[in-house]
Length: 346
Length: 268
Image: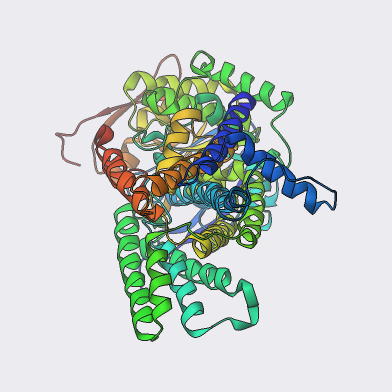
């Protein structure tokens, strides 16, 4: 396990480096970290001489590519962790924040903030706060729909999630088109497609903080998550307060999804694919699944984002388009493998 | 007294005029006893058990383990007093199609959940308890296999190991022989007997109840119809009135336990 984590961390570092070198302007892998090191030393208040790189290279690495690639890693890790958590909560491997409408809820919240300036008191945090609130409402609504006399009905969960997702996407479009702001329509389009373009350093702090705190909290709950996967009644008889735990998980899932959607829009299927691949690697025990899923998710989205930038260069694709192109067939494959139905896990 | 249930009543909440499912059921289990709860389908066996293992809060009455009311302690404390083999085996886990599934050892380790704080790691002490639980139930050879791939009988033994790893004084079993082939029905009951645990079990098969239990409670439409030793409860008269089937009963010469021969063709 420590070997696997170290290997994945190494792979993530390589992926990030490679992701930064990719693009219309060639950057050598070595320069990436020399430029980053130079900036870090300067920020520590120490003198550092500029190296043999050009001003343009410096700008591209430090101001454009590095924050973007790091955000891809954060968002990939965050969405993967959300997927793992939601799947344990509803005991269904098909749960994903995008499929179950939670991302759409976050988008509605975010768009309301942008269009009407609601939650203005929260300042720069209004956007993630709105997205969090929207995600939480969608999350609770989907769960409430799928719940019937103490049991979760899987078909209702998936179909209810899809229905709520569509409904909320409609709300997002409605708000966008009636707010009468042209820039808003553009911003929202990139959102609904999921994009990491134009990431600034100051956008990284909150997602990083929420991600690290979220994973730490979930690791403390790992025994409870394992028990929850064995069933609510089993979890209760193993001493887990399932009601309280589920409430906490609702808030956490919404917080992570909200914060990630606020910076990157609704990027689909990461929360579906990455946990699945992770479980094939390390099994179902959450103390292993959580850290590995986070790393795999980070690596995956860094590469997908790199692909989005270079596949049709100079045209850049929103990253969500690629995750959907991969994720849709993956979902179908999951359905057909071993004759699985959405009802698995009841 | 290990387990004491007094005047249990249950009717579904918010159900208006819906009928009461369980009424006036009192029972007890002494240290070291294996007590059976029998009755036809829908007689309320599972409902009584679920009140005992703290999933359903009784509409009236109380359940106490070691003299402590289970609803006055937390789920966690309760899980250290009683371990449960419910009918729900963990469908999400053993469905196998989506989740890779837990290994047998991980499944048994879950039994340590109520003993561990969130910050504590599973240490050598826990590993030893898990190992010995697997040893006692004979699942050690399959420790690293995936739980999902096991047969029904093997799964029951793994869940029994988990219950042992929980180190609770009372075992609650909801139809432990359900869906098992005859051989495995006896295997799991022999195991329960040989472990010498204190247990209450809802049982569907009367011959199993007759052969293994120290005492029986017979439920009919949510009421207690009879209680006592198997020989006292399983009489031709009670079987005819509660199950609606004619039966001939003789006491086994060696065990002294009732041996039931059903005579389905004879009118009741």
